[in-house]
Image (cartoon, rainbow, N blue to C red):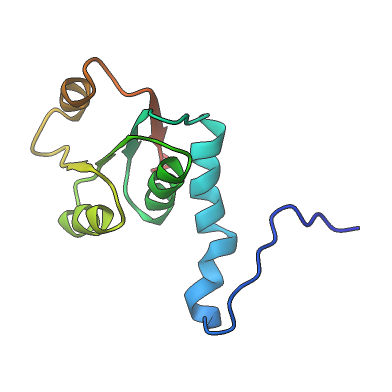
Length: 118
């Protein structure tokens, strides 16, 4: 019998193109938040706001993170991340991102997710 734990019904009004990446990118990003054990009220820093990093940030928020900080050099990714609910976005080419995260969180994030994959 196939594993049905990760199945979700796709609404009829969505096209295949709109949902094709859910099976890979969304689940990978969300699993980053799950495996890092984000808890309600946590401050979470996500490094790299490419699609997987964005999904990790959204997953952290859904798991109850009170503060989500994203770090990315690309200005378009930072704007999009804010539209997706990331509270603070930092440009690592313009600031000392670790020091700024420590300042914003009064000592350091509870969870850090590296989503670049290098």
